[in-house]
Length: 418
Ligand code: EPZ
Image (cartoon, rainbow, N blue to C red; front, side, top):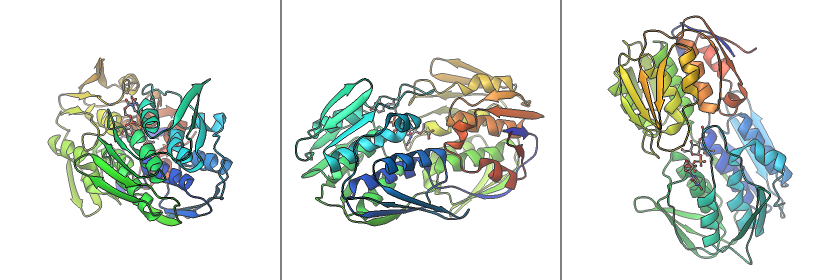
């Protein structure tokens, strides 16, 4: 993508359905037999189509309608599902690991290639496998493929997660839905995507009660029925556009936001003296002076989200002072820093902390997206930089940002796909 920077953004955009909510709730279809799952507000993204492709190879009939404003995905599930996930497809998308729980619970067995690592870390699934074993699964890994099976049904029980892993929470909640008896999972992830999954499980007949501070209680059922649910707005995409408005000193409105989902970001923006209002589900950004520096540590929800860390670093690279960002969730999520430095930023990384010395201006450069959120950070930096920026490897960005070129053009930006 080629970006001509220095233009203050103006106008209104609407947030897409959340990628990280849509992926697990689509996997819920694998809990059905001879029933249909209908989901509204499923975003038109590369990762979403990869997930649909995998579901189709397992025997699910997938219909996707998207008229530019609303979208709907319908999953018609056969009585008998296949349970082997093809290597070529599983490798395309890390979230394919979310099929382990539902397929094992519904078919009694599953073969799924281990999701590869990516540029932000090793991305192991040991917590997923540990929980499934506790529910009675026998698991062995041969040539990078997970083979899991269970005699009879998975058995409900109490499971404690050593880390509030989003994926492990989602996999085990889905596995528990068809297990015999009751499952209590403790120290679960509390991201809003987990509430979305709980609602979708309820719509197919599963009893899901959030329990205590960080627990969930699920009563397994024998057969799930058809249901319909809606995907929540994408809180990370919303933050990306909010920060684009801040960085270009623009005046924009971001609609279809759930303010409570982005409390941590809004609190840091307030600390940095950005100018904005929050009215119902609209965040409005106003021109303001240079941001003040802040200190950030990424944490599991409701802490500052790791997925907005690169975009925040881009915004703070123009602040009037020295900010620091400590990344505590992933091992290596600072690859974008060297690319921002090519645009004139002054970011030093020491172990898991980025030290960001604010500069007056960024200038355009040719840069590479190393992962989805790094790509987003480089794009919003390009919008603020003087001159022309070219962001290579846009495939990473298409995985999570629906029509980002059109949305930015609607906000008055000068962007062009090469
Ligand atoms: C989800 O990934 C999101 N992806 C990620 O978003 C997000 O960054 C992450 O949650 C944290 O919020 C989807 O929802 C599809 P985790 P997930 O399990 O489930 C370690 C984006 O940009 N861990 O909470 O993989 C893991 O290595 C993507 O949209 C284990 O050690 O996140 C990591 O350091 C990037 N063992 C940490 O926990 C396990 O079994 C958080 O991982 C599982 C995780």
